[in-house]
Image (cartoon, rainbow, N blue to C red; front, side, top):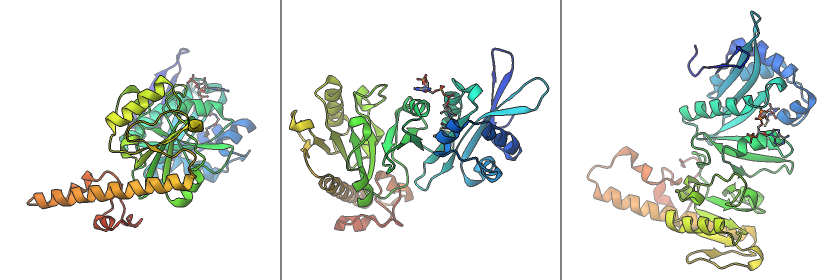
Length: 351
Ligand SMILES: CC(C)(COP(=O)(O)OP(=O)(O)OC[C@H]1O[C@@H](n2cnc3c(N)ncnc32)[C@H](O)[C@@H]1OP(=O)(O)O)[C@@H](O)C(=O)NCCC(=O)NCCS
């Protein structure tokens, strides 16, 4: 059996196999795609595109490009194995993977979640911490599938499409993309969407949106009293129209207790509600001002880290090469320049 392969015995005695995709799967994949109806093709490709053979050949060779691909196959009697589902990701420049998944209509209902979990496990084994996917707002099955794994919203210009990020390990324990050099703003509330997301992309600020503590099936670690890797890694957290509920209270307490060094900006709904000690009021501010605030915190946090690093270096007789791990934000190799209030060059940055 290939590494990473699994076998599932079905109630009718047949055996479903899940294994890494390979060159021998081109015909099976072509048949899977040829069997999709217009609706499924639209959900998968955002048009009723009929993928040519070169497309499935590319899917079958995804591992050659550093991604991972899985196929689910089942055999009826002595006939050839049929590909009934495929899931895979291509590596992105930020270290995450771009996810796609397709299940034969007859096999929907459980195979999608099963195959997705197999892929998340394979991605985690490969050191990929997050998978990203563009999903049509009308694709309720895919949205529900990804949301149940815990998700954050990434900026996306198309109004009919959302871009979701899901963690590969620990449902809801999302991490920032590993390779980056931009200030990071975590927005919480309003389903994860924020009116300043487009301005942020233009200003070079990386924004992730969490749905907020009142969202259904919320998997927010901070709301459960556990440190949140997204909040820990953010340069600032924006509470976007927080409510007065116990869930919001718990989240705000958690930020103050678990991530006290991360500034919390608050855009109060209609100016209502009280600010907590240390929170910064940005109610009614233009998004550009909020982004400016986030970038300012990014610079001062990085400068503080650089000072800590320099102090640690002075105290050690022999510096070790991996001392940069003390700077979890993108201090960059040329960290000394940040002390002068400059963010690092793209080329010099590391996550
Ligand atoms: C999206 C897809 C992979 C999901 O796989 P699946 O086996 O159908 O998954 P499920 O039937 O378990 O549905 C996933 C979840 O969506 C829910 N769901 C399914 N159809 C739904 C609908 N019309 N409205 C609301 N929720 C729906 C299910 O109840 C399930 O939620 P649960 O886990 O809370 O029970 C599969 O439907 C598919 O291949 N679709 C066509 C291609 C596609 O859309 N690919 C994704 C491109 S981004």
